Length: 547
Ligand code: ADP
Image (cartoon, rainbow, N blue to C red; front, top):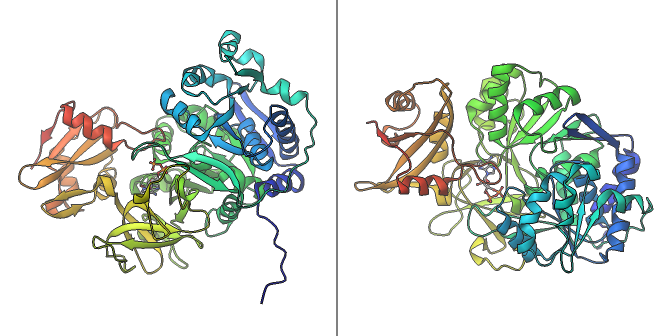
């Protein structure tokens, strides 16, 4: 028997039309060098229609790719709304990658148009020699914001440069939005390439729509019309974790930090605009915490801070709770998973200190994200919170392939192999111990680098701790702890080893320690363990022994 329900497509167009009308009075606020600029959702919808008309005039009439090289701002949101809704494909380019890599990614995706912020014009100039498919460049902002000579130099044979604002001004603020197939491509994002060369993930209208509903659900972030959402996580990093679309759907005003991500301007923006929800990687919250400790500041408007991308140190969450009253909620996800897969809210009735055993995990699986653990002999392991295996996931917002790139090693029988290793308990809480490529195998036993890092970052003098496995004659591999101490601190390796002693088994305690000024980071702010390993192998680190 078939249902009697209508088969109406789940699209971004719907999110755009709903948000722009029903929530037309909500606002998009963008941080600038001198205060905030703001526009309503209604205006954002109208400007999105102008953008769609402008792109149509430039020949975008199908599923061509339109790239963005942009910070989080109102224009980037317009691109998020207009491009998929007109049937084209939004491609968010990671501005923190090397220009050649950005060019490789733009070429691989076949980007024909790129929208760029004035402050990123110099970067685009370095990208273009590697990006032959780009025919049109749209520069946002007032003409005065970019160097006219640099803007003019973006043009070349077969490539025109336009002012975004001039193009929009010449267009109508209505657009005949087509009926798009919910399974068609809406947007794409390349993995940051921490594990090999970047690979393209293509999101559908349906996957984005469902993911937005999940983000807004009470068991995830519960975003609603009274919220003001601050995506600090870049819109080129896994869709800013879905916050822009989810907020637009919920009618939550969007607060965009643009390029002002340093702690001081970020605190000023938070104090001025009073966000209730925010999302960023641990590195950002760590830097913000150090700033608040040194200079003060009021971030009390935040009711929930989403944090993930790498393991969230317990000490960081506890410090926020105690020192600012702000709750950090850990979440896990990947570019391949849109990104949200699990969120670490404690179960019903568990509060206070007892809640930490759940809040310290990578989170409870969201409905529609199914997970299994695969052990060494390739069979599924029990979800008992003990058995350790590789996490595999599947679901309606999880990619089943990469764009024009066969990578059979990443998929198994319709499941995505995450490359993350850990446990799942019977209530669906996932606890990761490592990424598969970072695990440390000492004398045949696994040592969890994440557990050591988490414990070390609980020491009051430790700002950052990254642990890697290094070759060892006797044990095959042993952990090396690289430590960034708070300025002025003189804590020794022996003291840190003693501090760890009560928290992890003795045989796991690192003998090798290195005090460094900064942990190298990837383009999305994670510890770049490959670079730490390379630096160690080159002998760049001074290593002290503590036994
Ligand atoms: P890349 O794979 O290029 O680093 P992603 O941002 O897609 O880019 O990274 C996804 C990975 O980030 C996950 O597979 C996992 O290893 C890590 N990750 C994300 N959230 C968490 C978390 N809460 N705890 C530990 N690791 C996390």
